[in-house]
Image 1 (cartoon, one colour):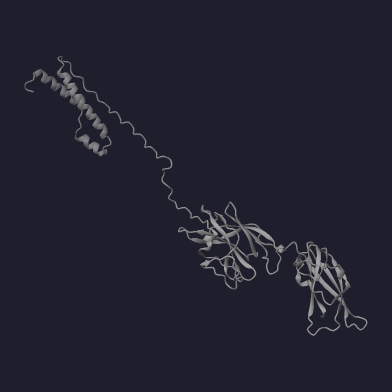
Image 2 (tube, rainbow, N blue to C red):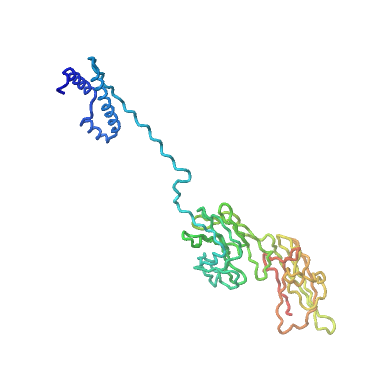
Length: 403
C-alpha cells in the first residue's frame, strides 16, 4: 500500500471503517450462540455471510474506479430467501400397505372321508344307556356295521357353518352307537386346530335328553344348529307312523352348546286315547252227547278319551270254535298294521261305551297244559293302524277258564 496515493489510501480506510460498522461478521459469540441453538439457524447464517462476501468486493471495486469524493453507500442487509418447502412424501400405492399379521382361524370344513381316516375324541354317551360302553377316546369311526357298542358315523348329511364366530366354518355330523336293535345318537361339532388336526368342538345334543332319535341337522345363517328330533326310534316291530318330530335349535356359547329355541318336551301324544275293557261270561253245557260247552263272552269297551277310536281290535279271544255273536262283523282279513288282531270291529267315540259279544264252543274238559288266556283291546284308526293306549294296564282281562 506504500505505493498508493495518500488520498486513495485514505478513501479505502474510510470505506473499510464504514462497512465494518454496518456489517458484523460471524464472530465467536455468534458461533457459540448457533451451537447452543443446535445449529437451527446454520443455513440462514451461511447465506447472510455469503451475501456480505459477494457485495464487499463489488463495492470496493466501484470506489476504486470512482474519481469523485462521494462517500460510498453502505451495503444493504439481505434477508436470505427461505428454502422452498420440500414436497410431501408420495404415499405408497393402494395395496402395498403392510399385510394384516393377525392369525386367521383354521378352516374346519371336514369331509366324511377325512373324518373316517382319523381318530377323534367323542363326548360321553347317555349314562345308563350304554351298558356295553361305547368308546369315546381316540375313536376310529366306522360305517354300516351291525356290531353293538361300536361308534359309527351315521348316514346323516354333514352340515357346515361358523358355529363359534371365528370367521371360519366348522363341521356338524351325527355319530351313533348300536346297543341292540336301536342306536344311541349324538350331534357332534368338529373343527381343526392351528396345525390342521381334526378336533372335537363339542356335543350339540344327544338322544336320551328328552327324545330317542335324531332325524336331521341344519346350520342356519346365524351359526345355530337346528336338530330334528323324534320321541321314539322305531325298531323292534314299532311302526314308524307312531313317531313324532320336533325341531330344536342349539347355539355355542363359548364353552358348550345350549338350546336356544324350539320345544323342550313332547308331552302327551294328542293322537292317543284311553280304552278300558271289562268282561262278563257264561259257560253252558251243550245238549246231547257233545262234550263241548258254549262260552258266551261279553266285552264292554269304554273310551275315556280324549279322542275317538274309529275301530277297536280284540286280541286273544280266538279260542274254540266260533258260534255266533259279533264274529260275523269282524274284518275277516285284518291288515298287518293292526298287529294281527283276532277281530277288528267298529270303534267307540270318546266318552262312550260299546258292548261286543262273542259265542264260542270250547272243550268240556280243559287240557292238562291249559293256561289262563288274556284278552285285550286296542285302538285303531280309519286306516287300520293300531295305536298305543294312554293307560294300557286297563286294556286287558283274564279269561275265567283255562283252555
